[in-house]
Length: 456
Image (cartoon, rainbow, N blue to C red):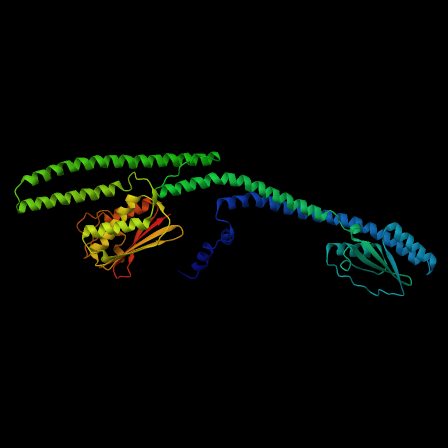
């Protein structure tokens, strides 16, 4: 790739909203709630900023101008009269009428005061006082909690006024914010309640599909919710019924095939029983036994999980029974197989099908290895069963191929020796019918490790 192509490729893979998507919740309820609530909050924020700012500025400007007129009148009185009782009397009268506590500081000088506005109220006061009062002024809105200290240069001193904050500031600002936040919380609560009821049928449908994928039934599942959700639920129920019907038809057909095939085999066995014992008799008997074994393998693979229902099962006990059956059938010492199973609660599985899966894997381990180790590990949402052996193993490139029906390896280790190549295919089919899988890996014993994972 040339250098000129690299920047375009980098831009092609760049997604500006990928970071935002990572912050979004994963659940449908959370995303739906954001879709409903976010526009409302944004609208309220815009309205609050525009209305509140305009309302606050207009009300504050009106109030401060009114107070500035009163301060201007009191300043005029101070400058009109010389020092004395009359001036003090006029000041007290104006202070009582306007509600502005006033104190005269004789001989004081403001000089060139500089007020640094820190709040919108400070900015409005600075603007109005500079506009309406020609004398030097200064104020402090942070020294007193309920008042603003305003000082004006007058004849022979400084006039100090304590202006009540309620007279120059919009008193309903906090109430407005409170009602805005309160209404937003009410809207969010109502939206969450309705969304919860709308999302619950979708969650039930997803849970029913998940249980069906694990080979379990979800009793009491009925279509509920909005029309679209009901349609999806009806479609799921129809699909489940079609699959169940197909499995049942296949099972019934295989039962008939099994009966039809065993009938001639039974006649062959009867005829062999009355024939004289010779080399031909022994060869025919082996052929009949091999045919019976092949038919059983075919039927097991085609039957799959069959019509068996899931039931609470102690997998540790089931695994122990499978080990005993395998060692007894192959006539090997029990010490050949080492079993390690964690105790835990029973889980919903198809007992006979899972037992068949485990027996297939354990028999493979005993066929091609001298020792086998079986371990059951319980995780939060799954069971994992490890079947290790010390046999020759399987090349990594062939590990997926051996799960194909009727596949046979050409190398020294053939997992289906003496069979038809269906053992691992049946094991994986059963595991996947439970919503899990079977994979092959290297064993710590030097051979092959088969791992069965069953979600719970």
